[in-house]
Amino acid sequence: MRECRIVRIGDVCKQDRATVKTGERTDLRYIGLESIEAHTGQFNDGELSKTPEAPQANSFRFGTEHVLYGKLRPYLNKVALADFEGKCSTEIIPLRPAPELDRRYLSYFLRSPLTVSRISEKTAGARMPRADMDFVLGLEINLPSSAEQRRIVDILTRAEGIVRLRREAEKKAAELIPALFLDMFGDPATNPKGWPMMRLKDVAAIGSGNGFPIVKQGKTEGLYPFYKVSDMNLPGNEIEMGVANNYITEEDRRVLKASVFRPGTVIFPKIGAAVATNKKRLLKIESCFDNNVMGISPGEQIMSSFLHALVQGKNISDFASDSNPPSIRKTTVEEWMIPMPPIELQSAFNSQAQSVRSIQSQQSAASATARTIFDALLAQVFHTTGTP
Image (tube, rainbow, N blue to C red; front, side):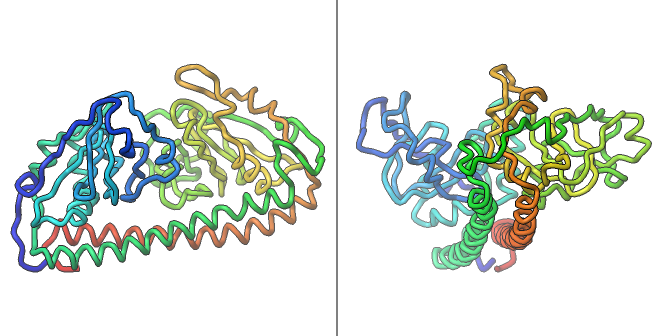
């Protein structure tokens, strides 16, 4: 970092809580928290189109001079810059930086991992955590000259542009297998190719995991990975499960009476809010998982790649009960009627899907590398005295 001074955010930035009352300024676009993507600094276009034009509560007015900071659940890192005037949920605070503070520079500071961590730590334990705005405004920030801020913003924007391109490439690669599936087999819901229909339990085994006491957790190596729902979020586990936070030995497995699920099993959350995340993953090796997870293991008539693609196209919330919390019963999944094309066609699909997965893995690795570089630049700019 070149010559700069250290200031409190509150010395160069103010909260701008200009209230728009319910029913007023219907000409302004409304932004809710769901309209801002987590961690990316971008608006979620799909949700943006769904936000109500007539919110049922007061809102804050914002413009192109503000940084929009989502204070609810600050660990989600919802920070955005609008290029339009609008009104937003009161869970979003419009921050107005002084002339000497570039709003893009401020937004990158607020999105940097260490800043997010520090703010989140102040809300630990709260059921609906909200950022303490006095604490946020009390944070110190390196404030170089305006020209230097613009130079830094240019570097970070370029680096983030690479992250965005990698994410888009990763997203497009992820769309290949579903497109291939539909081309070869048609939509399972309508079965246009007229394949025989069978109950899932007649071609696959469905099972839940086992209890996993804390005393057995914490091993970083062992014969079997023991997955939890949270492991599905680990880098590298976007498609196939290759990394675990916990492992167990064969002796542990016997004591726990844990079931071992073979490679090719498709797993997903079976209880609670995690069901709505609609995550599905494929086991790469023999594995165990806890009782918040359910697995479908293919039999002789169905190949794992076909099964995985079939489940990927299914919203698992359709299996869930209306109870609170929602849960998925084994018997419900077992009765799912699925099309069964010949095994030879499934095999052809499997070969092509493996090639596509190789591309997906490459794109995921490239995306993770770009993100790591970007986060390292953020740390260098805002938490060291080095110059990028």
